[in-house]
Length: 275
Image (cartoon, rainbow, N blue to C red):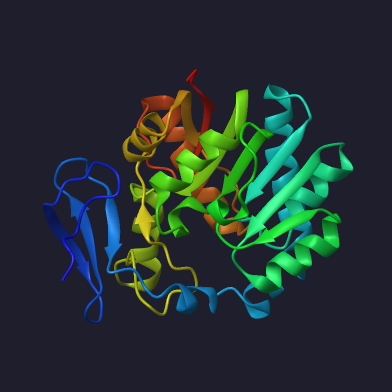
């Protein structure tokens, strides 16, 4: 059996946080506190989760609400960055890139799901690579802005993914990431009250399989190791379900009053440091 090594810090000592059906466990690194699933499910099994059924609500009943979410996200980016060449890693069915293209961005995307990649290509009339980011082999310093909207928790090697983004992002470029916050205490408390049980970090039956669970600290640690600076972490407001939006808003308010990050998800902004 291969030795288990933390993807973030290289430590080989862990504490078991959860156990699913053998052999799957959720582990916490005893050095850096990164939480992750071991062993990782087979990539082919992961891909089966993201077929047409997965995206049906996004493309149907939720489309108008999700469009408002994407508009708000793009508004925030455009207050910081000039329009240029954008890559959305894990672009799903392409709604965000569709909106960015309408506003004058030159857009590209990567997507693991063959169904979603085809839909994104149809919507955007842009280059959408179906596969992992490193397989696309983009030229160095070829993008002005790179986004990952709730994608990094799904990739098999977050460190390698961020290093590849550092390579393809131009000097002075912008990286924007949103990931679930493992310390989302209000949402977890609400789940326990409503469902009468604890919200688990991993089961093989999950609609979305999260291989890694980030805190603000571990996410920033990853970015520094990959060569990023000017790291800013705050609440992500990308929630379309009304009840969850209210819970997240309460967590965000608590953060602005206390500085404690117990909201649902993290929105992280970073820039490449000089080589």
